[in-house]
Length: 259
Image (tube, rainbow, N blue to C red; front, side, top):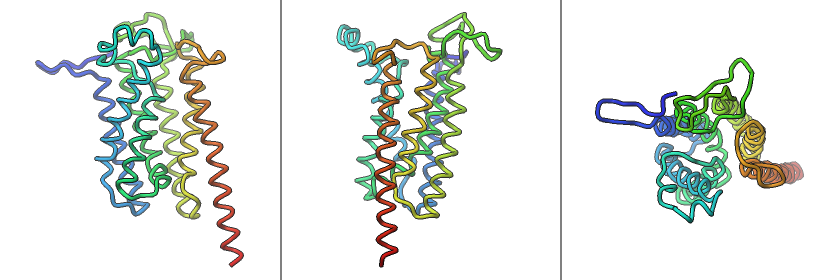
């Protein structure tokens, strides 16, 4: 593993480099989605602001998962380079996107639909940083042929374990492709905004829940990890919103047909 790159006097963490790369690529994806929707906004600025909010949210959520440890010595935990929670990043980025959509005078649901594929791509690339740094996001020991050890990682292990960041890289890129195609179909069929965002909540929630089954994380809620509990909430919210938007679309279609 390569936790740091040494370029002369500079020492660059690979995790940070991949997060920055993920945000950069996500900006291009979002700009393309804006283009097909006819939205005139700066995707690079939006992703930059949402990315920063997501990083802050991910950090805060992670440290508050163990409140006793955090409040006993908060500053080193807050300023550590490692330890970020996916759901905290989602909440921080989501809040920022809602504020930005209001400022840009874009429908919040349309805005969230456009941002969903970009968010999946950015997350996928960011996971490469977890893999390169060996920051402990890997899974339980395995005898499968692609199991890997992380002897030089930030959180080293000599055991062969599931390389879960690589699993997430593949799965989240696949989710991004599904979301992009779903967005194309919804635009063509002029369906209610919000469907793509619902799919994002459901698909990423299911994916993270399953990944957590082979991750080394403490269990808290009904035998689930914190991330699994958050994933269940994400899936339930996505399903509820989906049927709400579906009903809204059906009602609008019936009213249009009656005229």
